Image (cartoon, rainbow, N blue to C red; front, side, top):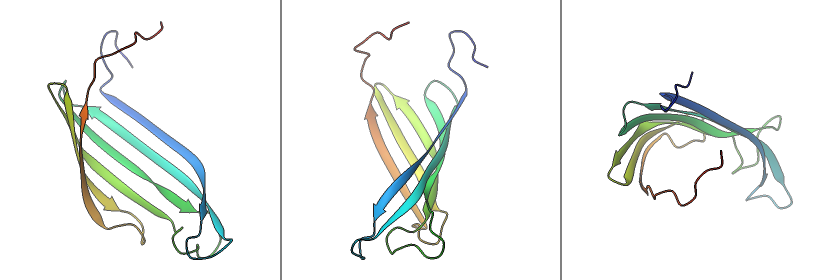
Length: 121
């Protein structure tokens, strides 16, 4: 549970939806796909977080999907490191389906701006 005045050590979140994709190589053809994602962030200390995520899309057609609308998904695992008012993100990427890229890396930098508005209570 959440303790007063402290952030929880682990947060999990997810999403699910529907995507309507035009088939890029076939005229007047579309494929409806299921979009999904689940992720978690573990707070190691005030400066370091461990993050993980699985996301992708699943073909809803029976049989083969039109080229360019196939099922794809990937697993990402990485870190977030806070320094001053910056947050550095790094992650390794692993493809989970036949059409997903096999491996990769990603990184980013976020400026943590001060709060402009006070949240309502």
